[in-house]
Image (cartoon, rainbow, N blue to C red; front, side, top):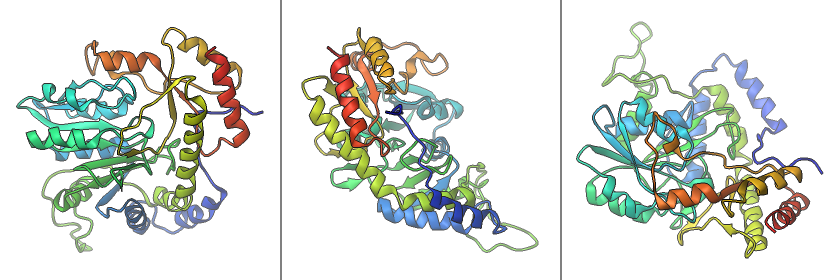
Length: 366
């Protein structure tokens, strides 16, 4: 049996045709393919207010910037995530105030958000760890009370649902990733969904220097309108061509992740603790997180490695990074970060391999 990776790049042969066509079309930067990808992906999510950008980090940066995050302000965020969630806050010269996370799933604990809010707080940032949506209703209740926007880092959650709606339809800003090892990829890329039409139009300008690409261009003078200076964060037509082809496989990919995760949850019940799912959440399961004895985690990971299975923590708690925070002593964070271990559940894991993963975990935790 071949080694079973935790992540795998999805790159179908069918992508070569549209990619070659775009490469030699004479239009390889942001153009018609980007618009088409925005339309198709927006329809898939159920929200047409989407701006394609060059990474999820750029999408997060725009969401923060549009929320008024700057020097002298702060953002309440989660420490249990990839550093890509929180570095944009520091890059905008703002401070991070970390809330705690739930010990049983690593997602932000809404009951600990309010104590971190100050007069200088501009936004609340949440992450859906491993593709399991956090308790958005609880987060939104706190945000509404304090008049704050909610930004979702949904890099892990493409195809997930909360309260009957796909992730991408709930909060003020929702950011997706098309990085190489996500559900689908454009090699690298991202999408920013906005709830408000004004902020959506603003995001389209800000990703391209602050210029309105939709206004009629004067061939001599160029674009005439700039309401504010922006960034260079647009997606290219080359990336969009890849995204459009990848999108054809997305339903099948998400379905496979979910079905594998369902089997893992059933077969590992009573063997290890599996990441808890909030009542209204339907996860996308980018990866599958189990919770093991913290003192045995390294040994369990080693045994899985010897069995040909990749298993690791994926991301480290962000308070260990000096530029982001001082070390925190949060009960939920301490528990989850010391116990969690991620195992493969993706589209590439066939039934025999999944059975091997299950059998190997049962052996490893004895």
